[in-house]
Length: 499
Image 1 (spheres, rainbow, N blue to C red):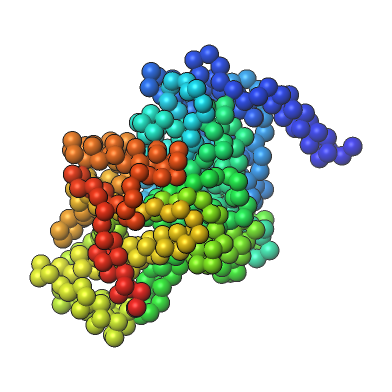
Image 2: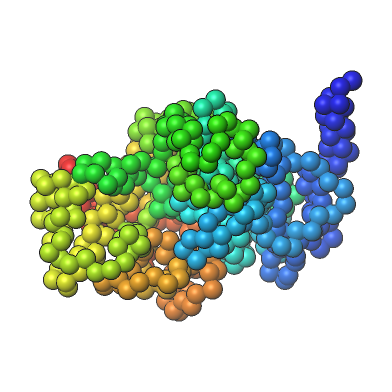
């Protein structure tokens, strides 16, 4: 018997001995037996939390740029009182950098009280442009208690570690998407041990997390892993200015392009073995080159944009939303200084060409405050975020039940540090709904806390039933002003459709 076969037999035997007893909770619920071993979390009167539970083997060494591999079972009780580590990334928007490549872990939060029947499971996929962010950013204790759901927040490989491609490399450009599916398969195996119902799983995410939900909706390999989906500020067909008039870049890239970029990286390696041997620190300088999930892959055969347009999506109830002023955040990051209104037309021409600039300027005239950034943000919001979100609702809604929302509260505290002043304020900026769902440590007004309760209740109802509780095609969510909105008119989607 070869050493490789012998090792496989030993691992299989260990797995057999560890998983003979069904996954279950013990005593006060602090110790839970998963399919790979027991974990001990923290318990209070209101909730239970379990952190840093591995759902895949460490993606290091030969597992770097390989689809997620099984976890080796462990004996004894694993400490689960600390949150999952942060995946390798560079510091950005207040998120510290990390050199941890061993990061495929998840966190579980549940209400403390036992339930007579299994609870809905909600799996959160974090945002961060596929280059930064972490499961540990999202404190789900209040959310889990108020929704009476089991909430799972997951990590996945990012940037050069999750979306790198190379000619001949299986899985090129889509390792992070495969990680998400490995976490969802863990949920299927272990949800009941934490009091959850594996037959009632909702995936939800914001920004790149919303895009990730689109990817899972489009992935044949995700069939049966979830039954509902929430897309927050991640429209499946979003496209952004590419620096040349009339050119826009999609979130999604063909595998061949990602592989070509990987072969041309400036790291001094001529093969994948050399690249796998590089330390994390050597890869972080090219981290930002690989932030587009690849299609034409086993995990993502076609672009989610095409899947959405042609109906090749999993047909599950879906809630699709955005924020009213998505692009104020990005406009400030791109242009932190004042842009004189005299430059407005030239700025538009750089994106839409001279003819297009005239048409856009007519519909979005300057307001006379001396700074064109707020008008530019309104244009980008409607063109790249709002109207693509409308398209996602419309196209998915032709084949499945789809609900819509727009977060429109203009006074939510800024959650990103050191942002420059912005004309008219940031209003309902990209990600501004997050502190009303999760605890970000910011101070909300009494009216915003009431809105938070309404939203958490709606998200929880959707997870239970597929219905957030409103009949309007798009429900506007603002403190003291919850109700229907004419989304298409407000964001000039007929105009953008004609453009």
